[in-house]
Length: 80
Image (cartoon, rainbow, N blue to C red):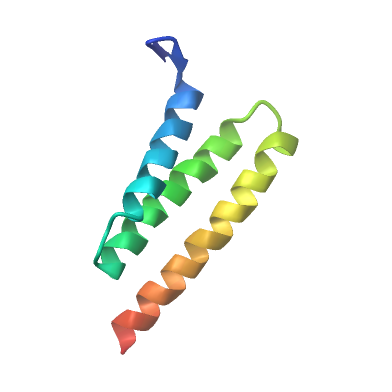
């Protein structure tokens, strides 16, 4: 699938970048974390779509860790 000569894999990557960027514009920390989680999940998908796992693995690991940190703080705030 190509739109404006952008492949589907690239579209996932650009969408992930946009979501992470958008998360930094949020004033509400809960919204920031939720939007950032969506961006991280898109980056994880993007990592799996890379031509080889060797290329995608650093993307997957880093964004999985960031996603877990966001989830931890969302749950921590919810309990307080």
